[in-house]
Image (cartoon, rainbow, N blue to C red; front, side, top):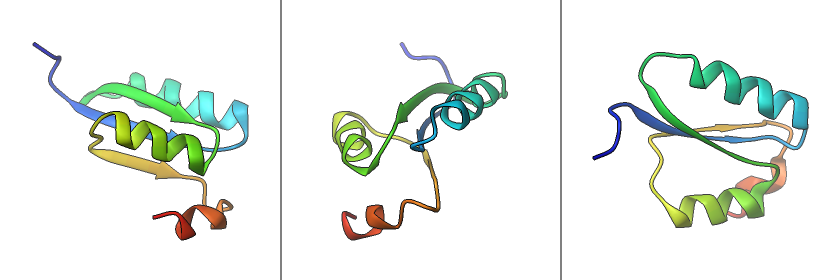
Length: 68
């Protein structure tokens, strides 16, 4: 049985920002798990591997929109 709460994916190519948002989300009530990806290709792999309830995207990754 999995813990209740949302599964989140964070996508950002700036490692400190990626880890900070991951940390903040893990401290938030209602978040059960947080996965990270440094770019759009890795994000697609994560999405294919399992379902997510919410995805946080770095808006400077304009190339990611061509992959959706």
